[in-house]
Image (cartoon, rainbow, N blue to C red):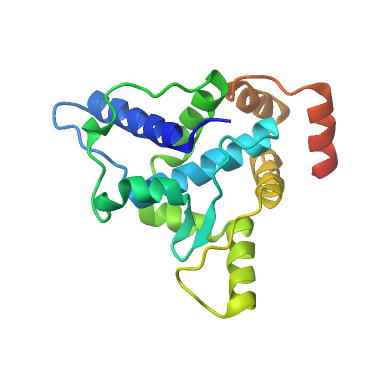
Length: 193
């Protein structure tokens, strides 16, 4: 597993690269809320593609979507504004698989705004389940900290990532995550769908 702050830094580095390719007036497209949602999707993609979590920090079901508290604390002073492009000058050290998943998530989800990603995460069964547990346990609390289930995330993302793909697209997706699935992983996926 990798440090979630390294993953956050890598996402910011990818954002910086993309902004710089856009031209002279490069601006960030990531604020703290969007960063949190991208981390959620990185974890979900990793669980679906490799069967393993990318990072060990828990994801909490906050009112506005999934949040990794450690990352929230690091970037909370930027709340309400975009994160400066110069926060990350060089890419943090990630293994190839983690870097591939981060690039995949940025390609698939990076184009969306924080508000759009928040809405998308509110549709995710793992977030809904955690919020429902919190409501059932102690009534509605907008700052509740119920944890998202990695098992539930894995089930949901495996379904989502493979349900509408041809075999060729699925193989390409696995390859973009850094490796092909083993025969046992293919069997497990087939049983879960």
